[in-house]
Image (cartoon, rainbow, N blue to C red; front, side):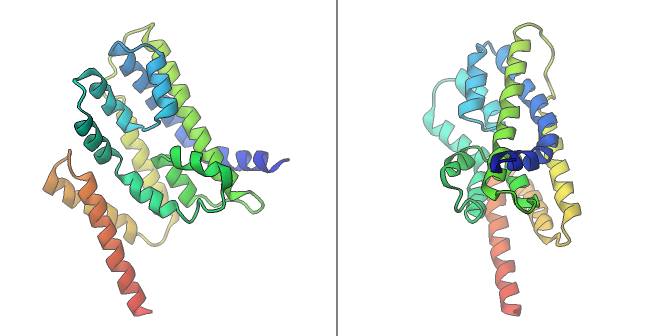
Amino acid sequence: MSIKQQALKAAFPHTLPILTAFIFLGMSYGFLMSSKGFPIIYPVCISIFVFAGSMQFVAMNLLLSTFNPVYAFLLTLTVNARHIFYGISMLEKFKNTGKKKPYLIFGMCDESFSINCSAKIPDGVDKGWFMFFVTLLNHAYWVIGTTLGALLGNIIRINTKGLDFVLIALFVVIFLNQWMETKNHIPALVGALSSAICLLLFGADNFIIPSMVLILISFIILKKREESRQ
């Protein structure tokens, strides 16, 4: 078995929960785009070349409204600001991944980040190819779901209200899985508490960036305290 086959075999089981969620959520996105009157090629190409999950849902209204690049930039930054922190934390892991690195950066979503951070890669499996196939499979699930949804959306009409709830359910499952696999729950508690505080202070539309800043500051303080104890 080649290095790539070994990595694909090791990565695939980790992506199975994402398969179900992304197919379903991708179909809801494809349905919604079709319901807005977009041709099939639009949602499919956006899922292939943008692959921004929740931002793609938000972008539907941007595409239908008056073009406002400043508003679009700030909205995109707000929705996807967490990826800045993802990228910083993955700098070490992405080292020595060669030609795979650009795609790993482009295709990193919440779910791929979570798997690549927490998965225990079996001995003998190439780390770079493992992360590459995790990213590629999750990307493929999203594109397949979008394509199915866009195709079906042109054939049948249903009420898609509430379909995007699957994204929230997915985050809850990932959070619980990481909670059960680790003994140190302080980072999880810091993240949950910081988000709750910022949600109360800034509201549902503006709490993401303050939450990330508060989490970052909290981690810096905790790390300095730990270093001082040592």
